[in-house]
Image (tube, rainbow, N blue to C red; front, side, top):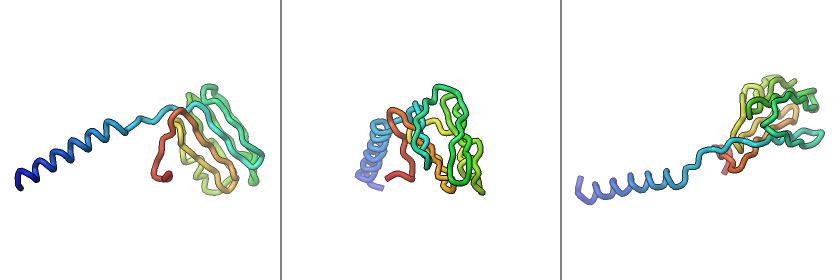
Length: 118
């Protein structure tokens, strides 16, 4: 390994540290949730604890808002993938019951992106 190789590796590590510090933004807490269903779209604040029943083609989905988080408690779908998605609390997080056509989208000041977004 030559001196030039060592300098290049050092520069790469310094650039990586700089990019991490400059562009990494911790996810913001969600402020409200958009509930989208065949009957329409509703926006609910995450600051008030409540349980909401939303109708879909298969029946009623039960959604719970508590402690600034939201989740599907129950849904009439077969595999209950929406219930297993758990609590959502950061801007940009999303859960859906596709068979029942009900979805939740948490919105905040700055959305958090994951591998599903491009």
